[in-house]
Length: 560
Image (cartoon, rainbow, N blue to C red; front, side, top):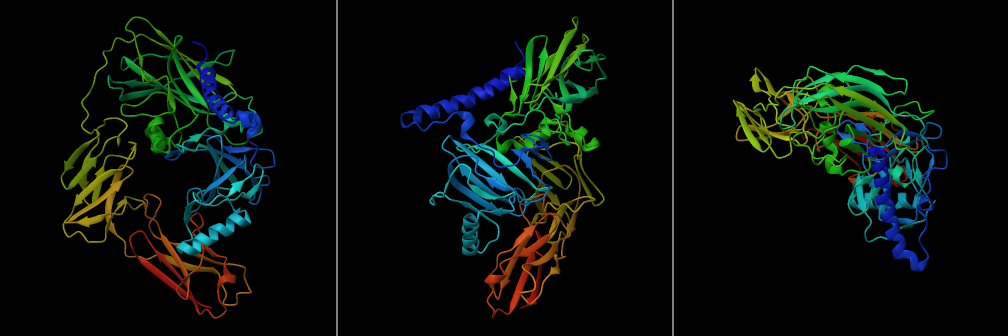
């Protein structure tokens, strides 16, 4: 079989071209079909420079688009619709994508523009209308019954830094409109020229049991031959089943930061064992990243190794040609094996690894592991309800109470879904919460019949605490003389983090009991009120109320 990276890339483009051809067939009689290269235009006018690529490995999620840098490192660059379409959704939120809009196109795709600083004035007016109608600064509006046509190249807003963003940029996505699955924008012509092959930082061999569960791992020492191929050798096997992992990144000329790779393929001789390709994924697979990477290695070192095999309970659409082997190589007791790994970027620049695998006479075993999916475990006062697809593989971990600490596994074991926890404790206060020991991460909880019941999205050591401390509201910029400032600004903080669960700090701003729109930036904990012109001259007081995730309330009033 020829280089699978080329085959996979061709396959992705083939499917995309088929989609375009179907559209062209439906539109051929009206003469409306454009060539694929002409269908889209860039969302910015300045040269595209990327700070993030599709499916890059991020904490607890895959990166769903590409990040386009600001032209001058500040907010304000104009943004444009990449194709004719219809505005289908607008959202304003403090975290995640911040201010974001969605445009549906007639070729079955949706373009997404996130972290905006400002919307087009007409879109801004529409958002303001809904915010005051529903008395909520954070909104998510689907415009199913409101037809807002957008032409290709229309100005739609400006680049910003809202939501969970680390600097001014545009997070840009192409999605399948029907499934809402994100698709690699490179497949639609939004790629940048890349002439540099990926860099491989480390190569690993994982010894596996009969069920594909990890027994141990070995980092392979490699050297580079005259052709630039990394070569290594694996001996002293621990099992007759092995699989491969790589630490790698891609580099683009004149880019300072490292980018994610496009894909990798493992071969045994000429047979394809498994490949990993960043074409598209489903948002339900986001936590699957913790099974794709060597989570133990990541938690201990802060660096990521991509495992080029599917774990025991893992199903991830980014894998291809892995249905039979799951990426597992069965060793021979007599013959050595030759394993090749191709790591490639979208432009087919390839970095090769060749491994000589010595024969292995060890019979692959299957050890008994006590913790698995779809089971309930009780240890003392602790009860765990582990649902289906929670663990990536069966494992062994302890569940104990040591003093005031509840030990529930360890932080080096990844979870695909949360685990329900029930803890009995004498004289349990009704406002008890479960907190990750040594942090301010609260997993909340509800006390029912002397039990604290909650879910945890990570394992480790926990303690039961109570939170009676309300948030803090501080004044940054305010004056009863409304001509002095164009906006008012405040800082709101709380003693517990709200990033580990769906509950979050609630903030309500009112003037004499009537809603006033505000913007909260979770990065700086700052609340800004800009609609000063909406406040009547006869208004008497501004009220700011903050309610934390445990129900503690802080309210401050300001004389107008």
